Length: 163
Image (tube, rainbow, N blue to C red):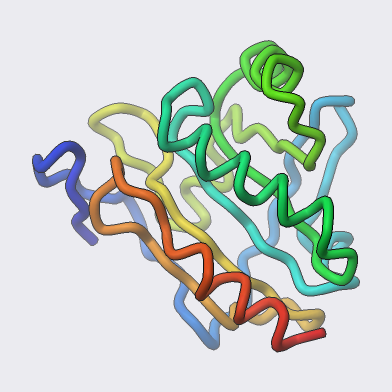
């Protein structure tokens, strides 16, 4: 699959899961170094927000938006995934007052399993997945231009429909 990065075409490595597919499992560390697995996160509808680099403006906007939603939507689980370091994620969350679950994809396991690796910059593509309690993807958006925000309303609508 191809997306653009600041108008320039870039290829994503691998195959991207789509609506109706079983979400590939993952095991990623959070800011407390606790291993978080997909299977343990789907007791409620799950929104997986994927950002290329937490220290950039659009990624910050996306993460703050879902952090606000996570504070009010008790029937939905939210995680943000990037391949930033623990220190980068921790520092950013502390500075921005973000308390949602942040997961780091240090070895690019998630990126490869979800076909979201942009090899040219060794970062994840911007994406959102909504996963139901059976582990099925009910909504997916791989943002065609990495530097643009996703459609928050559609992702939230898909998750709320599962409650």
